[in-house]
Length: 331
Image (cartoon, rainbow, N blue to C red; front, side, top):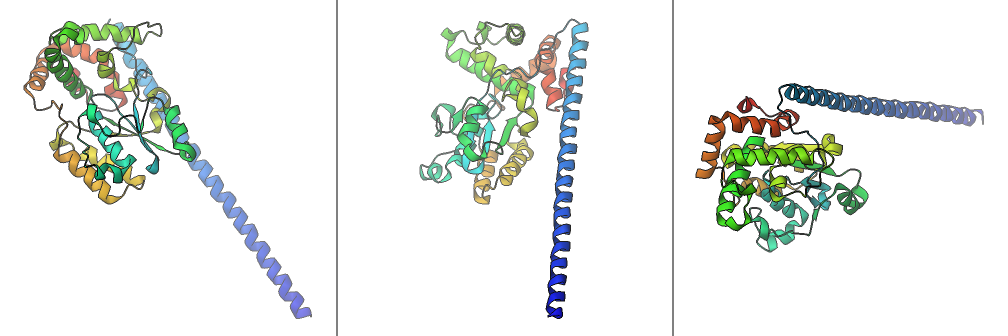
């Protein structure tokens, strides 16, 4: 009887001690996680404050010189393509490989259907397979569509060097398309004159960023807008996973590998990742301009004309600072 009683007491004591240590270990783990999150959040806030201070200082210095910079983080344009199965949302920025990203998001949206219909991630924009299937204009719409994952889905964006992006835009929209559709008077009817276009575009961006603009965003506005004017970066900049891609397939490896790593974190299968990598590195979209004569001509004018560089600096310098691109070309 006494032996049984002693055994029971020891067992209860062991349970009590185990429970005590378990609860304390859980409390310690919770405290550690809370501390880690707190430090992580503090670092985000600190980074944002440093960025805000850098932007303000840069804008103030430009103002003193009488060369006002276009402000950053205006909520101007946004396009999202989603892959709910992988809890992914991809923001597409015009002239930042947006056609390629449309194709990639379509593969991830319904892989079996995409391959069954023999589609390609390099298809021209107007014939993209997932048009209106997985596309949204606001992150609130994306959250609603994501359902249970609306708090945890990954936000991914692909960007490119602002000057490279401008050259691609100007070559495609202000030279090729302007010649093909002369009645549109595209690019403010500047007929391929970069200085003419930049002066017009700079003044329009000043109006759009004033907070009092009655201007309706134009075709040119949306394609030439600073990177930071996209993707609702003003509210969600720190939420994004950012990949930097070159338009030239020969220089695209690092950016593609970074993008695929983001997809891998969302459990996209290796065979799908391999397909995306192969197609993205070996092909190009039909309106790619990086190896065209027009592209080279625009690049040459930027290199030689300080007035052109001055206006590019006014429009895109903050993009270079925010997204950490080398802005030597603008000096």
